[in-house]
Length: 370
Ligand SMILES: [Zn+2]
Image (tube, rainbow, N blue to C red; front, side, top):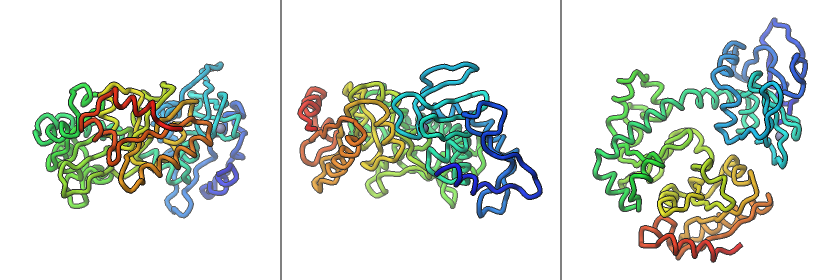
């Protein structure tokens, strides 16, 4: 998605003159450009005013958005600007320049630059209207989901069935529950609580917390807060086991903690993560399924490291197949990998639940083949 494509998508509002869009602002040319005057989304008759865009950009400072997407400023420059590795291409030495005062970025490696909206377009590989929608969702959902996570956290200790379920799945310590901020959605009480706090029903519907007919979306589910979503695991066998709220599952789970280790254990489920963390393996992360999204894949490749792929040893071999495919793709990016073989039919969670301990798991790691 190059600059030309963007320029073609940008429609100017009728009757307004504008300056040439690119590289004519008085600031450093390499910081990319402020956008031209108002543009409307293609095929969307409702024009997006400049004011709306400026408001959105002001509410989502570029630096904060970058850091929430795992970008780290590596080297300070003059006038408050920073250099770091480029999150848009495989970058070996810092070539990504950020000016937090102007809210602009420019990469000397891939030549791309712009504002937070342009960054969202490139990073999530979406078109302009979807980038706006993602940013709006990100701005709006954050405080609401924090509130919901806190509420579910309180519910956990009030519902014996939730505590029993966690115990059966090997979650035995309060420290782990607090670390993962595990909660419980009993159903039938979230909507009332949130509307009492002043959240509107349409907003709750839009976030997917309440169904179209007004019931709590999560009923009898253990809930794990993710960076911009909530994963809900049903404790009842009659409901679909896994659910997410609408929207992306986000990056790797607890990546900020795992990424500093030279060796990282990758698992597919949060209960796998839980038992490993509890057993003292804090270099663990979780992809929430065997299919990694583009962002999760980039995270694993952001520094030299060895990744221990520890997917389920299901009888059909689909976990192992997924691990082999991923291993090959990681190796193409220069990342060292090991395939961890669990006993047939096991996943890391069942391995520990059935009595496996940290030392035995360590032996599996040591026996893992490249
Ligand atoms: Zn770049």
